[in-house]
Image 1 (cartoon, rainbow, N blue to C red):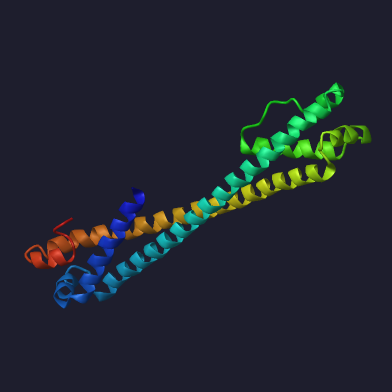
Image 2 (cartoon, rainbow, N blue to C red; image 1 turned 180 degrees about the vertical axis):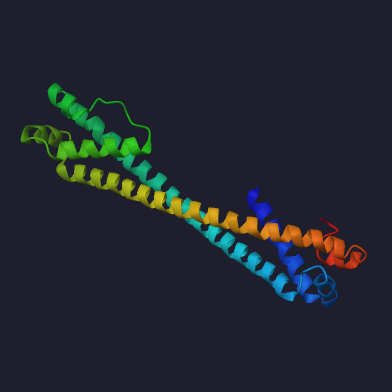
Amino acid sequence: MKDCRIESQLLFAHNAINNALRNSNIKDTLVEYGYDDSTIKSGRTLYEEAQTLHKIQIREYGEQLFVTDALVQARAESNVLYLKHLKLARIALKEFPDTVEVLWLNEAYEWSLFGWIDQASRFYHRLLSDSAAIRTALDKVGLLSEKLHDGLRKVEAVESSLNKQLKKGGVAHNTTKKRDEAFDVMNAWVTDFVDVASIALESKPQYLEMLGLCRR
């Protein structure tokens, strides 16, 4: 809904400003009310700045959605492997209750992304750095070292995707802020222009219609 309003604001400003600049009769009338060619062109500059920032904001928001989708996919794939490895580790180490406790293999599953990354990373780092006896037990259930390294790489890929998503989200947020500020300035100028033009062209409805004021 907000994007629709923004597009409408841009279209209205574009038509009102450009039609005022193109029609000499409208320009001649508005000069007496403080809106000469240079002043109206300054409004067009504000419009162009708002339009440019709006396009940039759309692009940045689209890129943010892309990296967010990549993050969701990366976590889903990594989590399948992590849970499989976790279950195998619990089976392999059931004869090592002290090790299970030390390794926190029975700790509650972390649902938050930050918590999950920390939990999964600790899981792999613990198993990869454990004793030969533990390694032998893990090997018996097929949880070989290379599989653990693969699981760790996938978790690290999730963390990398998260960092990209956070960075892109920050850029998108800043771009949106700049876009909104530019629109505030443009709309303030357009509002004053419209109010003055409505008075200046009150007896010339055909010109008001050219500026889109009758519909407004």
